[in-house]
Amino acid sequence: MAPPAAELKAMTDAFDGIDRLAEGAPRTEGAPNFRRLPGFPLFGTGQTSVEGFEKCLEPVLKKYGDEKHIFWVNLRQEPVVYVNGKPFTARDPAKINFHLEIKNPEECTALENDFAEEVRKRGEDFKFYKDQFGEHPEERASNEELSEKLAGVTTLNEIYAAIKDKVPKLEPIRIPMNQEQAPEEANFDQIVAMLKDTTASCPVIFNCQAGISRTTTAIVCGALVKELQLTRELDRMRGIVPDDILDALKKKKLGLPGIDIEVQEDRNAMQMGEFEVIKELLAAYPAAKIAKAQVDKLIDLAAPPPRGTGVENIRECIIESKMSFDVSSDDWQAYLKAKIMNNIERYFYLIVFAMYIREVGPKGFPQTFKQYMDENSGLRT
Image 1 (tube, one colour):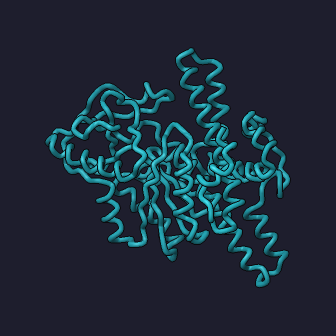
Image 2 (cartoon, rainbow, N blue to C red):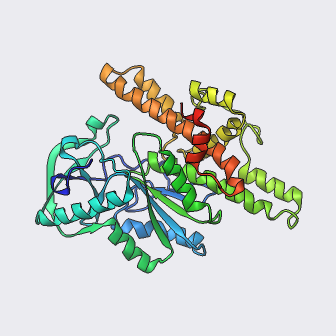
């Protein structure tokens, strides 16, 4: 339960080191880590400035302007308000280093509205804390309260409404994901519900605070749905386009390394996600092998260069944390152990979600992901 708005403190969204894009990669002012998943109409960014929203939309409209919808998906559980054109989160002063966790998007929006009003009531001297990067949450905030003159306060809904006046096809959606844990089954269903009746070229922009972990996870989920849609659209061309051309196109667009395409893998088993629970999944469910290959391909595409254009490899980060764990003190090991387990669970769920997409998607999604998990409850243990 979040404290009332009157008790909350403001903290900057931006922090030193938020930019994780590779050297030389194109950057978008006011939109940290804005990038596109190569070959897909899927984009990711950190929380933008007020001006940053439209800067992100420019390349999307240029390439996908004929599409019926443009989805902007906010993945944040935590309330966000804009003060002087910059995003701030509302924090519990008793847990200033941690985000609030509000699963219900309507409740989160209501608290944003209340906190925006509270900031206005506090007068011209706007007080806030500055976020900072830290591996451990205890390192993620400075204890010094800063201040600046209040020039204006805006809510996300007000920003979205102003943009929709210029871009009516923009569809803002909130799918609250926890920053530290695997997505909930409902999150996967929300992504499917958003995309299942759209075309393979319908664009989506995902954002979280920095555009790193949650955003990359959602991009991979979106790409799994997009590959299903592309398969369906290519299959409709059979009989119109010669089979050999169509098969070559499907292999180029949808081929899986190690399944359809021969690869010389230079990474070790741990880097490739061969954790004990994953090996058990592969042994118990034959469909998991192809699902894992598909997830691995998309994770690599969403990762930093040379394999992708993103900012984090959400599979290899597990072994990176394990290496840190081996040389850390006891208190750090407790945190890192939880982080490693959460990230393995996320990877596991992505593979199972791919199994669901491949099995249920071609039938038109008559079953939700949660129902699929209920039917295969052994996957939850």
